[in-house]
Image (cartoon, rainbow, N blue to C red; front, side, top):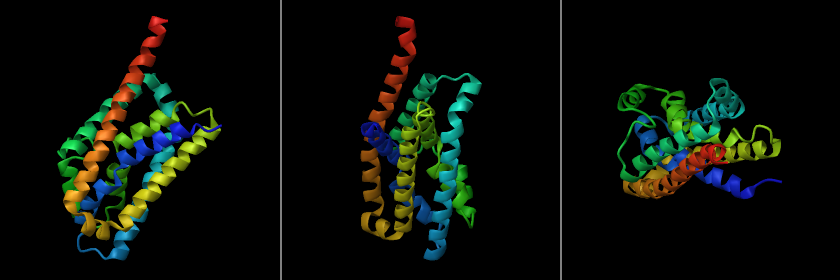
Length: 212
């Protein structure tokens, strides 16, 4: 049977990390002067490419970590710390470079088509979301039902992101920069708590063999 609580937790965490509302101001700025039809084409392409990246990490991420000799608990601790940095960035509204750097954003501003870079990577499929994929799908490699459920959650999060990008202009007019920042700060608090829980779980699991 599906663990619905686990799936719901993953969906909320993943959606918060993808941060579709937070991408809106940057997306609009980078596509300034572009027709709405072309803007939506870039949104579709960017979300599709991000989905392909997520799928590759979901299928091969666990095997890659095992090949390198990295335990899932070690990656869970690192992933928790990385997500905590992203949460701090969201709460305080100060870029830390965890998602993208200033030079990368400036390069994106000069591009005519931002669908691959920086929209698909690193804004949607960034370090935080990829780490979350590895943490969630690693233990589910041998459970096809849970694996499928997690894929559905990822697909739903991408659909939400696409819908947000499609409606970027009216959402921005409705919320404004201040409204978008308030939403991001609330999501940042939730993500920060989840990130701390990841670290606690990783430390606890890594110490179990030593204390058993």
